[in-house]
Length: 340
Image (tube, rainbow, N blue to C red; front, side, top):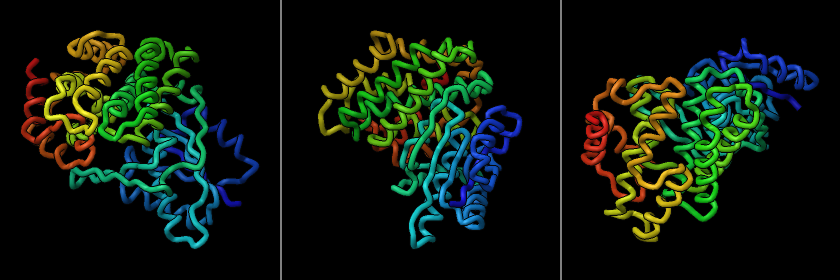
């Protein structure tokens, strides 16, 4: 069966690429590189063309969340062209936090129009995932820290989402707790396989969690932040988390049918997972994690709060937040954060 093997464009120098290529050599795969930092219509189209040309029956995607997302969308588009259905998709993450290896959705970015589109379908969900924390060992500190923060934010948002279930709450809290316990060692000691395994598991659990409940306000805010400033996705997600958590903890304007006490109870469980007692303590945890990874704080990032709020308000993820967030309230949150 023809195999299409997808790598990222920056993977040539990574030792795991030679290892993966050697392991799959007997299948004689067609090898293609995803050429962009984030999936775009052009970069996904190139993968579709490659899969069509080789008649791929199996797509193996090896890389970070962007590489996996591009391959997932390409696989779904190949499926739409074929009477026999979708090729199998095997995802092998080389970053530890996105959860893209197990989710039924992916993202396409349009930087010219400053817009991000989410694609969700059964054809986007991978057939199988192989998670090997040793593949993350060559990541630089900033990239690794951002990816781990993505797992933490996804875990938190999966727990408090209005779409949450008992399963997504349990998975999300487990992910957040694993990141809290292992983050420092994993960021500072890339050879610490135990810590890196914990972070990879956090990413896997958070991916399974958001596959059920989806993300909420922090992700809606992160998209324009990334588009306007170039911040890594997980880093951008982490910046508003302390503010949004404190806002949701008050549980006013409750959007969850289970009521404000349910939301307060989930927030209390999130605080325990993060090892703190009060919402105001969460920001100190996040700032410490960002400092360990050499990631900027909001006071060091130039952005226009009104523009970010206007864009964030257009994303459906915002409606999953347990407390109502209007465009005006989003702008106030962003402005409050910048002045602290």
